[in-house]
Image (cartoon, rainbow, N blue to C red):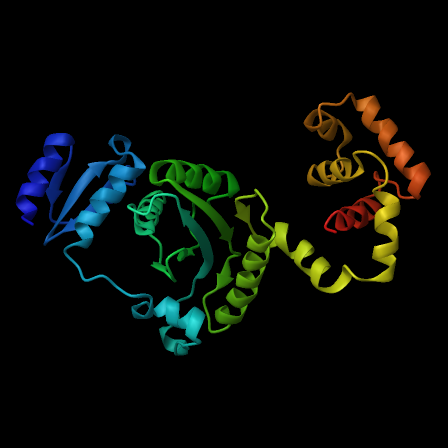
Length: 295
């Protein structure tokens, strides 16, 4: 396919797009390598799908990599070590993505290509592990994307590419040869969460590890097995405990989240204590009862 024709067509659609010898450092612009030049387009003019299509066009100029061609795949999945002098002084986090496509005519690669463009700083690496799993390596920088950022990005891309995505956002770790073991643990947490068939879309160590270790180590403890039915015989106890815990034990916020009057929630907490002996205003008691909701 003739690149000159493609460039001409793109500029007719995006009049502010232009070619230049180097990428535009301004984060408000998307710079795509084409042949020996860079096509620069204002991000504000692009939808996620348009961004992915531009990226696909650029990819035609370079050979497609397999997972094994990526150093980070070999490090994380094959245990390849990096010599100490080649390691950079930086902190990175590993983002795991699970994708289910609802339209077989749209490759999941398109979702990944668009995902990469949503971040102001390029990823250290991205690759597909298989037809439904991808990895992105992000270096710690001045801009840190939180759960709300990831949720908004994934929802927009799922809508554009007819996919369902779930994402595990790893911790920032020092880039050294211990990263493989840390990733293996994060991968176990993500696999565990995917097996729960929850409607949640985003996972991390903070919302995964308690549930994981409860299931692995505590769920069959006699004290747990005995406590569980006694605590949750009360109506709405599970929902009350979960919402209260998720809001740091704040009664006013929890009442609003549950569409209850504050006094109604106070009464429930008091009744729960009278029945079970656990005071949900005490964080130790609340945490223990929250663990029991994992059963």
